[in-house]
Each structure stands twice: as C-alpha cells, then as structure tokens.
Image 1 (cartoon, rainbow over the protein chains, first blue to last red):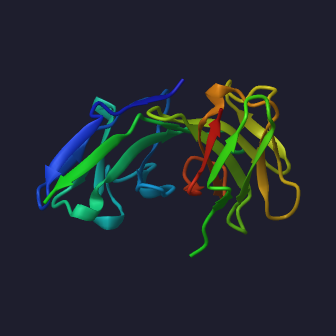
Image 2 (cartoon, rainbow over the protein chains, first blue to last red; image 1 turned 90 degrees about the vertical axis):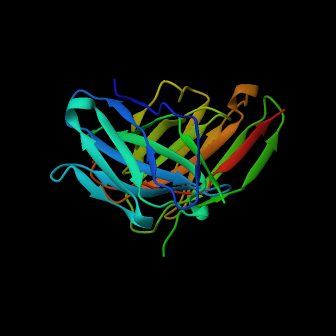
Image 3 (cartoon, rainbow over the protein chains, first blue to last red; image 1 turned 90 degrees about the horizontal axis):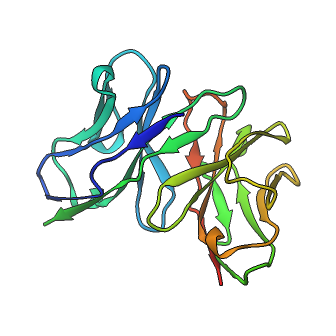
Length: 115
Length: 115
C-alpha cells in the first residue's frame, strides 16, 4: 500500500527566505505525486503535480518540486516566501485504478511566515 | 473559474442521527470523491464514484456510509447513524478522468460535529 510522510509538522520562515518542505513516499510503481495547499477555511488547491519526464516541476505561486526516485522524495521549494504563503501544505501520491483515482495524503506541514 | 461547492459549511448533529452532506462537482467532471480529515490527522480517502456506482472505497467507508448522485448536479454522502468519531472535515472532489494523471478539484469542506 502506498504511503506519504511529511516529517515536518510545523515550519516557520522569515518573509523573503527560501523554503523547502519535505515529502517522502512509498509506492510500488511509478508514483503520481502532488502538492496541495490549504488556506484556513478553504479547500485543497493543487500547487503542482508529477507524472513522468522532467523531474523538476513548476507549479503555481512560484513553487517547484523535484522528484528523486532514489530517495523516494518529492520536496517542495520556493526561493522567496511571501506572507500569503502561510498555510498548510499536503503532499499526496495517486494510485491508478480502473475508474476513480484515490489520493493518499501525508500528514501536512503547517507553514508560518514571520514578517 | 468553475469550482466544487459543498453545503453546509458546518453541520452539528446528535450521535445516532443521520446526516447528508452535499456537494456540487464541476459540471463536466465524471469522477467524484469523498475524503475526510479528522482534526489534527491526515486527509483520508473514503470513496470514489463513477457512472452511478462506487468504483473504489476505503475500509473507513463501512455500511454506515452511502453515496448517491440523485440528480445531474449533486453528489451526496450519507452517514446513517453518526458516531462521535465521525466528527471531521469532509471534502468532496471531482475530476475529469479517473487516472492519477489528472487533478482532483476539492471543495471547501463540511465540518461535521457529532455531539
């Protein structure tokens, strides 16, 4: 069965600093990987996704993530954090099925941004 | 921009009562999902639905749960006899295709509180 681990429950960074959120996955085949963001009172918004090809993927809001098969990781990065990036971030892996793709989520990382 | 909507935003109920959570998926989507997030825990897959039948369900989705698409727009989750441990945020999602390569669009969630 697939699983996702986000080792950092909380991270605090200063505005303008760089950010890296860690994600490790366990999956038996080629994974479909996602990063979602959840702002308070909001649903889950997709930041970026990886299926194949270039291992560095670009997403919305200036985020990027790098797939490293050898490390079973899919870490999210941003070179300069903005105060509006404060939210909870979820890494997820997708399992293929005949119809309907379930996502398995990590526990989330809550990002706080200091002025 | 089309979005998934959910009603109500917050539902309070007594243990043993039936609740129905409602979702309106994006209009041209064919796959529908329910997830839940118990406070402080991971987002967990409950069920996926396609072509008027369940395509996949997790072990959480026992006989107390059912899903239905009663008309062309709504997608509902019914809990027949709520338990305290059903208290959670319930997210509805939809996608155009059921493979892992496609994004699931999430609604803002319904917070269910069972007293």
